[in-house]
Length: 310
Image 1 (cartoon, one colour):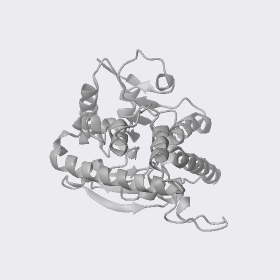
Image 2 (image 1 turned 180 degrees about the horizontal axis):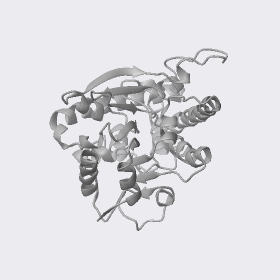
Image 3 (image 1 turned 90 degrees about the vertical axis):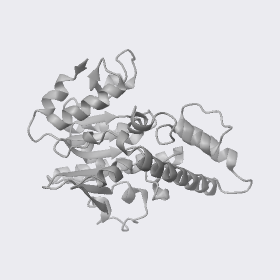
């Protein structure tokens, strides 16, 4: 069993903080595979029990839209109804795990001395709500202090209900003594159904937005300023991918991660919690293993220990 030496070196480097990309594996570790928080398959089968899933879940969601569509009705209306169902299902499951499984989650990974940002690919706010219960932790409202909050010089001011605005907001968790972590939800939240990203049409808007983020980032970079978005936080910090495989359809994440080398001119430091080294896929080409020779359960426990002691 081994911890990546490069990761350990960064842990021991004063002032270095990580950005975490958090996926559904965070829930899988805590509550198992039978929760819709940890399984796309379970969630989609709740929407359409008879569907034959392909594993390409964004396309599977498009199939569900078509199968539920009423003749002469706009598909967008069908999608809105399905998103409302998703919102309701996840809210109910979120309440259940907060009540029954709060002690199961590895909250020690959210150490503000080592982590500055969490980019959650999940629709729920379980981590934030659990951390809020801890003594000394306060949770603010969602704020947007990026260039997307007020797009000066463009034809019109951006709407605060638009995807561009909502996906560049964050919630600040204050652990006291100026120790802070920003939580971002670029794929949406259950309390803002307009922002939930499920189908391919939504994903196209998401990619359009991250390209605009890069444009704004480059403009700010020229004037030696920072544009505070999750895109920038993935460029500026070493990254740890936890409980996520980053599928090929998540083009916003890939766009940001591949921009690291283009923008910084150096090989990006991206670590990933993963099962083994036997596979030869895109994850193994782009990400370094966080640990080797450990089960997922052991890896979550080891990461908590490292973040508590380093």
